[in-house]
Image (cartoon, rainbow, N blue to C red; front, side, top):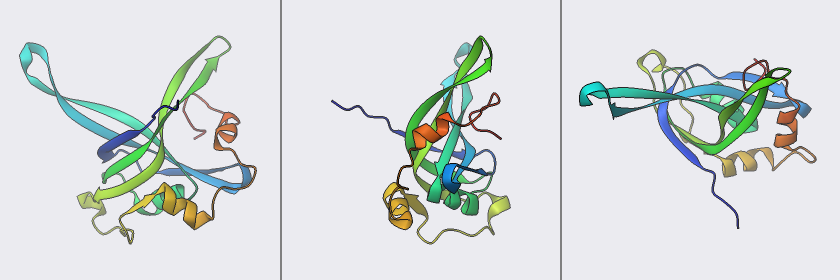
Length: 158
């Protein structure tokens, strides 16, 4: 039996995407998304609680977010949750959780980014990205490539 690993977020982009290149010239971009909800605080008063999510986009998704996404934009993100262990030293480390992007839609632009270009369709999906690049690169495995990345206390090398 197979399992289900899907995460869906609606939130605000916390920083502009940063793009790098890994094996065989494959691009990846990393950005953060903040989601908030109201929870019961001290004395039963409502308090806003914010969670920050690291999102990683590969290939055409990387190009898409680099071109269209800006800090402050409201986005809908779909992906799968991926964890990685990062070594902090010879006997210590920690686990990092990331959302590997499978679909994204820009819901609204921030006021500061109102003049930024919007994509034609407003979203891109895994199927559309695969069609654009003509399928996977022969012999390339994203999980193997990620294991080769050097981490300096962060999920990606920047």
